[in-house]
Length: 544
Image 1: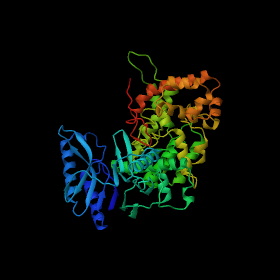
Image 2: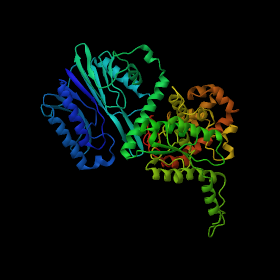
Image 3: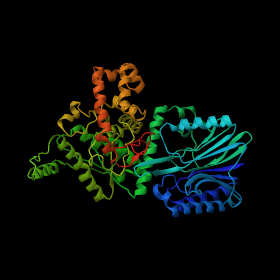
Image 4: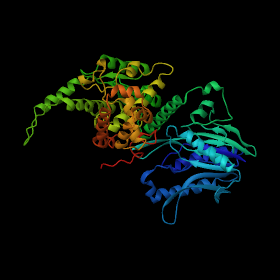
């Protein structure tokens, strides 16, 4: 039996567009002499379409296009994912099998299992999926064809990349074919008594692709192509997923240009590099907005970043704007309250952040016809180390599901072949540079100790552990505590002289995590999901 597997790009909420994609693929399958076409789950509708599932006209349209797909099963069988409405009115997702121009009974085969999927990217999940499919093949003693969708979908707050990575496995669990991630691809395969035979594919199936997919294959390349470490491959895969989501969603939003506040720090530098890869250097505008608190080190790093990327760049000092606001407010007073309008301390720091994003960047974006970005990361979001309507502004939060240590890993990935991210941005302390207390040239920076706190925060978020559990773990001994978290014990002991100091630190950050930080997180821009525990749909938070 010859099977034409289609890893198609699914446009959510557009059955008409997806039908045309399927019809064209079916024509190619017929021309190739295939016996069976296989499409992904939710091939006509996409899986994330919000309240469209409650609209009867949308469901009726999806069902009608499913019948149109079935009508194309003339001389070829078709297996595809769509929806149907049951007797109670509930919309049900299922696999449909079409034969001889109409929908038939469910697909059955004595020696083949077909899995249709609309699975989103989560870093590290490919290896688990591979293991599950291998176990299924070995247990059932059947070959397996796994066909996944590509494209991006979202829940409004949350953006997902349907990862593709479709697989064909023999009954002994050996992977014969792995299609690439984040791109549409097709493969013509023949299932024989000896297993799969790959006849043709539109994708370039290299050993690197297979390794990134977490798979092995009979289709091999020189062993040196596989020398890349698994950690490097994981961060490279995250980078590819982020670029894919940025490109696809900017297109969906109708945004061709982005404006980024280039501070000289690591977050804005990595964000800029991602957007350049997604949209092109001519469409990414970098703006440095210095005050007296910004060092020459960071200002030079921002300029060097723009030079390395080849992007438009502008320096827009904001001190005069800040002074104007402070002077104007200083002349104002309340009725029935004697609080003086003196803007200093944390209030002046927040004014800087809001002036940069909500005023300067938003205005420049309007002038050049683009959107602004949010450069915030997961480490900052968990404890609210950000300014509402300041650095939380933007069309998307590209780094919103990345710990700060992962942001540094992305910077190293960008610099593999040449310096893209300036070394100064990597070497200096992470700092908002909003006061003298944040002077990077003096080694001052953020209060978050990222190499340690990232692991502690992940223990709470990804491990679903409470503050009390983390305290009890520490009391079992610093070595065991650090080993469980994956933190460096030497670094931990250097930063915390006593157990009491470490516990006080935990309590401080946990109060922020469960307090004001939540109000900030739920107002952040849409986050690009790369983990299984992002803020948003991945973590069902409530304001308790």
